[in-house]
Length: 307
Image (cartoon, rainbow, N blue to C red; front, side):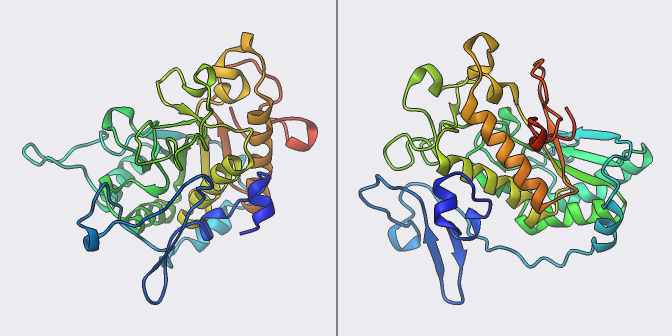
């Protein structure tokens, strides 16, 4: 990780250094918490006081989608027929089974449905780990953690790989606007407001969640690295960026004026992702009349492919 780039909001691979990383012997933990008085790790050695997470290393999953990736190059403007789906409620197991279908089971059920109905893309609602089923993933806590509701990270890779085998692209809903309030996640991460604004007038979204503070370089690097992580490490074909108007305008309200740090974040993120993943589809969920959303960044636009 380039430390200068991280602090100035230019980093896209912070996840390769920060976080939990498996080593030959044990796990290395690194975190950005400049105001913390101390950091500790929980485990069976201290009776799992507080909360717990499962540690997965970056995977060497044997993707078989090389031919799909080659076919995809240069076809980013082909007609799109996208099926949007929430993995947990699209179809449920038989009555009496209090569980979700896992990623591998979804591959067996969802892909035939997509091919039968001539969809060439599937858009998955957010899969970043999240605490509340009712949010459908739009209020996340783990921006580098595929939700364990549906299995392990490699199970998600399997689903994407099988989609590609059937010439179906996979888009992920990505939420860089706000995050869930749970105190085991990003809220006052080191005891202070690092990821969120310290002031309540812009600190909380209309959904009651915390707004990311995009004026801070470390926050921009965190989010850009998350976006790149899903594209690179899971072979997603694109991102549908949620609530873009809430990034363009303060609290999503045009009368409150433009949020210039967040607008610059979008430009930097989109330009950087296109440089690293030229064929990735970048889609803005935006209902505003803001000009240039799909214009290239070098022409003054936000750099999205579609709106």
